[in-house]
Length: 158
Image (cartoon, rainbow, N blue to C red; front, side):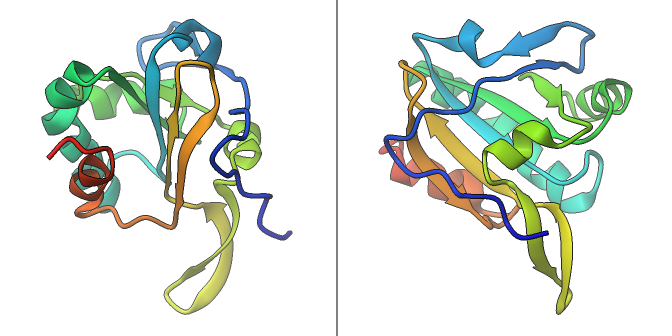
């Protein structure tokens, strides 16, 4: 399996409706009219993903003040996402994509390098989606640590 096609600024963001950590569903259409930071991460409750989620949590107030909603997406089941949210006091929705079809549509699932080997999995990525549902930024292979600070700088929030 090769890496899915990557999105670029100006592309229409793939629509989705997925189950969330609180048992409801969330769709991209529900967020229309707001800017969205959709970030894809491999697995809830792992060290890197926890660091990244806590960085988003800690920056959420300033991101929201600038008009951004934050949504995390992973292949984890909603029950695991609920535990993750509770354990780390996460204050933004986490959506579950167990068949990875939405992750693949965003180019965030495919071949990646891990410890010198090629594996297939979630490619840690962040997408900034504008009010009309178009990609403003598509960042692939981001680092878990320091990424939110870098994103804030790119969005002119620091």
